Length: 64
Image (tube, rainbow, N blue to C red; front, side):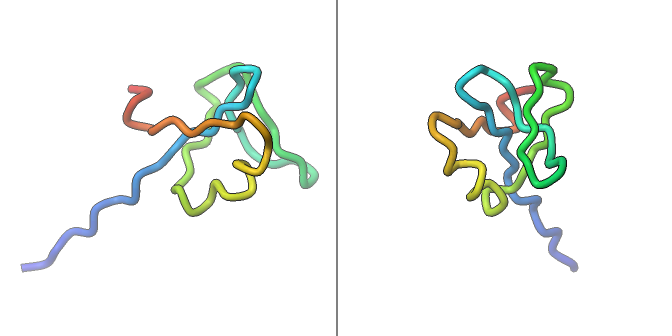
């Protein structure tokens, strides 16, 4: 029997203005006030985003 690997938990990064991380453009983090554009990321991929002051992580499962 094969074990199915559970998907790593993903998080949405929210900035101090209530906008969500939506990608990178020209090497700059992009944020949107349209939460449907949020890019859920595994915790290991949020390190650089979390260096910005007052950014917060929200579990993807808490958004549904």
